[in-house]
Amino acid sequence: MLTLKRLDLADAGILLAGARSKADAIGVPMCIAITDESGNLIAFERMDGGKTTSITIAIDKAFTAAGARRATHDYGIASQPGSPAYGINSAIGGRLMVVGGGLPVEVDGVVVGGIGVSSGTPVQDREVAQAGIDQFLSVVV
Image (cartoon, rainbow, N blue to C red; front, side, top):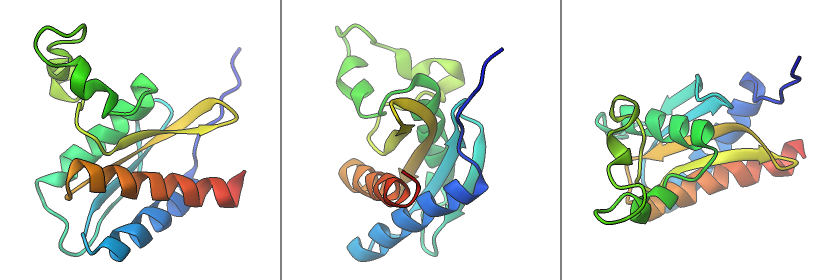
């Protein structure tokens, strides 16, 4: 039998608040998704002005980060023609994201969930996702 560590709704609220604060600070309204360690959605927020096209992207970034236990930007170069993971972005019905903004959430070296952010540039999305994780770790750990 396994004992799992996983994010709960209160944890997701902390992640959302940290990400929202950073998005406000940089002036980019975002779509923010939080998943458990298996990539199942726990919470989602579309800030006023967040792009409707970014809803699914944010959710899939969180899904990828949690399920693959890896940041989505790590797949960017690896998924290009001639690279070892070429074409992986079409895996899992196209849900595997290769653009920055999806990060695994880790506690004591164990992935407990994922955060996915979309509506800005990949660098902005990643910064906002990291701000969510930083807020979470400052409160929980």
